[in-house]
Length: 450
DNA sequence: GTTCTAGAAC
DNA sequence: GTTCTAGAAC
Image (tube, rainbow, N blue to C red; front, side, top):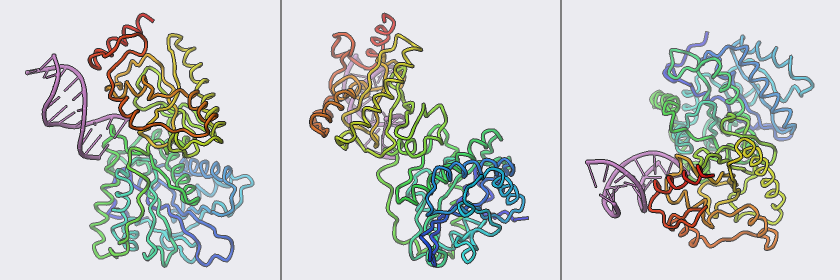
């Protein structure tokens, strides 16, 4: 039986920072990037192994089916025989004609597999990684991700070239995972039903993080939800105890700060939806396809308020080129579909769809918003003016500009000022409404007369 | 994007 | 004294 490392005993939804990427050094063949990972959640998390194997294999199968490149391999490395058997039999059952090399199930220690698999492994993760890399690794995770504690999320970190882990083992990146915990003696235990969803999400996040890293792109984890202050604790607990247990480790190896992910935390919140819409609940993602994802605005400024977002990375409307016209037309079609559906449910609703001239969040997003503006989230003048002045550009206008001049450009200062202008009703000629509460009353009257 | 809060407006 | 706004912090 494996001993539980005392340093992570206290963690709740225990981080599973075992997933790592390794590039085989003495690789005479093509460069193969390997992801080594354990059976997630089944040890400390006490997740039933058969169901875990089922979930893990299904996600992996789906991933392999949609990514038939030959430049990577996935390796589950476990020393727990039950877990190995469960994964092995489940995988045989569902793998069909998938290549045996693409997903391998190996008996071994994730931190001691250099010779055999080209991947290093431990189940005393925090301690061993800290010994190999130094305690600045967790600090680095915290620096890159201010709140790295969402259960089901992945937090990739680069390992410096001069660290032992990199030099001797060829490990380039570690993906910290926060996986669901069902062990009632740890904090934040979740029900079996919840854990199943979260385990699927964890595997999905791991695969998606791997995919982004493998392709040289940035992975953007979802950010911590304020409403759930507990989620943060798991990572904190682990990291606190880890750094204590490794006072004599090679602190120096992480001297050089790693590059920070693009921009501040909150401006990036839309990326996860584009990169992996499948990991979000139905209550957040309305629908998605290869080109776009439609989400419910988290702070709807009207009875109905959704965002239509291209999957492809485009920061804002000024980045649009003539060749994006087709994409814009598709976003418009999607928006029209939503509007029709919503109108069927409530014929009283009127809609507009379009873009803010100046976006707060990165990644182009088209608002589809009903014109009642009855919402507790509509709180200030800026909210109001951003949807009811020229600051809001109908998709048709963007389309036309792109068609005629091939680019989009607006005078920032002018539009900034629009946000500060007085509050005017968008439906009648009432001007200079005194304040937001008055506006809300006025809007209610319109709605009731409508 | 939101939250928080000092101080303006009433 | 309470309501509301606006600007900084995140």
